[in-house]
Image (cartoon, rainbow, N blue to C red):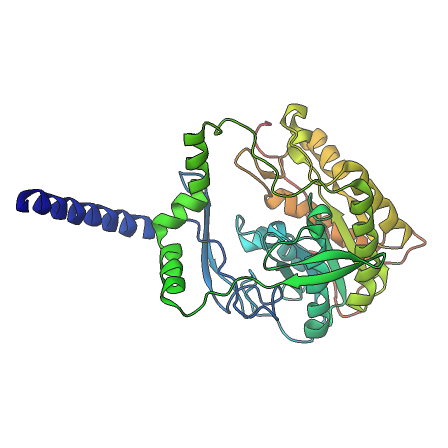
Length: 388
């Protein structure tokens, strides 16, 4: 009896040593940590993480496109602190604006800051997973905190339909009395119990993050494999949202923005993204979360209401046809790269500073708090090598 028990103890000890070595090795590598959310739900999403929180980013098992950084005083990704009542231009969006997969200097907000000559007067407010409903809540917080002079919204696929999905830790819309009402479901707190602390400890392990984030490993996938469902299409996490409902979200979003921001619609620019992989090759197109008809409706109604709008489908397509440049981290990541952010910055500059038409004055001009610098002219986009 003692011999088997002794062998078991030696096996467990050996396994622990191997795991400790693996953990130490991975801790020295750029395993993707993501962003640890702030516990103050009343301040989220403006205060995204605790102030000055370190993060690291990489993708795939090989930890490609590695980036490290530290958030600022508002838990946002920027190398400078944001000032209360600083009258900035704010750039609002999800992970495209958060942009952990790029150097800050390559982001829309940084490039627009250089164009205006005021590098610390363009505030990026991006949080992964947000949707149009979250953008409105964030806009209200930004109005009270910063008193922005203009606002830019990067609208991506899913922003309309996901606004109607009740997800813990987000703002969402609920139909009530023929109207859409904004509600918030707080995130589950970390808690002070032993179980909560243990879960947090495991979540902080580099090995755990590598398995879950870089390898996209989950226990559910393993169980599906044993059940023989690994090769079957994954069931949708939420019911399909009807076109009429998506249009209702678009109407709500556009009606809320000016009054929430305290700005006229001409000082609000919408940059509506598209499936860039489908531009490179039609067979690379992916299923859409938002209906194309809802996307077109949002663009048309926003223009009718006086917002600055850029349909990036035509912009990206013409640039790709002319220069064969890719606007994302193809083929491993659909998020914008430096060239994609440059297009966004140029379009935002055109809409806010120059106006899309002669009868619609630009929101901001030289001498109105955002003087143009010597490098104000939009930068040209250099072609990437080759094409997909």
